[in-house]
Length: 249
Image 1 (cartoon, one colour):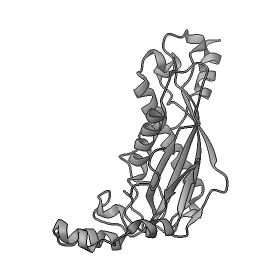
Image 2 (image 1 turned 120 degrees about the horizontal axis):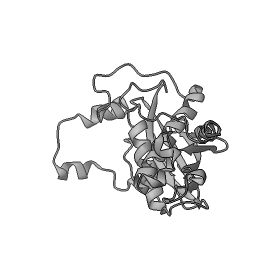
Image 3 (image 1 turned 180 degrees about the vertical axis):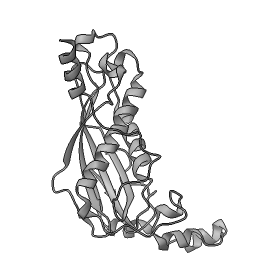
Image 4 (image 1 turned 30 degrees about the vertical axis):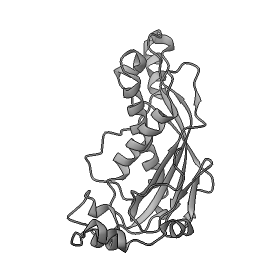
């Protein structure tokens, strides 16, 4: 009986291994992370769950996605839009037999910036469980803080999103030539942008004078991506650290 219970718990727990951030990146061709947009306004709380705010959910996921996909140094921007549909963060103090498992349910959309198209006609739904460990067997709510549980789920979610992109490798072009600055700021922007960034410093006054008088219309004209009801600027080959046109999630 104990073996059957253990097998059931293993089946519920995630097999995702998200502890590979120090390893070489997978083959995602020319992938370069553009906008990393996460909303949690529609997230439904499970029946045996700790409370989590929209901010807590979105912050944990955005951080994990940036940690994983910020390692890629391709030449074309791809935007990720993630909507948290539901969550269950295991409660403390629950008996072993009914110890709930932590889980996130996400809808994921992907955009190609250069082509200005959405690559996912329908969002891909991903269900993510916490990583299997002794803590999970007894219910992670008994041994971990809510922040630790969220970080675990978010890391696994980012890994599952990466797996989804790898299943659709044809979306991405050939990989760029190796760069000596792998992982650095210059490696995470297209060559033209990196060259501009590396130019000799200029004074603040000169930089301000060189800016267009009204850059907002140009950014808007390049298109938008929408996650939930929120439109975001879709930059075309510009640095990824742009501020969304619509603030807030």
